[in-house]
Image (cartoon, rainbow, N blue to C red):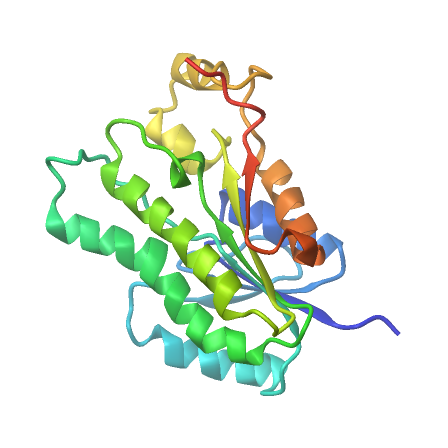
Length: 237
């Protein structure tokens, strides 16, 4: 008899989150999604949730109790939801920075506190980072800060869950053909082509490729504590 496996992902209404939800459903996982907009993937159980709402934890706990029961099980938690606001290190608006950190870092920490006690051995906590988890570019300072912090949270997760049988990793996509990237490029085909040229394959990463890496990470505890760069090889300049 195959062991039941569940996955909970944030920000699953589009982009990498939607692709990951579809990948795990196709692999036979029971998939749950938290997002403000509905996850369109058939077979996903969705809860409308704003992770900036401090009261959302109680709603999520009650929802999961109803769906999964209180007993620990094999669960993959994927922290995918994120926001990006253009800014610089010398012009960051404090309120905007707090909101970025709240969604990109604090919300994952809150969900860890809520969900890790439900995890049996073989579970995983996966973080969707960025190439900007380990470097910086101009014009997105608060996002860079948050993705560096997310990498630190993953590394702390690895150390603090030692001996539990729960593993963790941070998957760091390069330029990926998501709605966020297209919006940031203003839908300009030339801008997108220039971004594609920053990889050694001269193309953008597809969301489904990141979903495949997340699925691999969920099933392979040997990569515990790992930063997994999924960027097609970036051109060094």
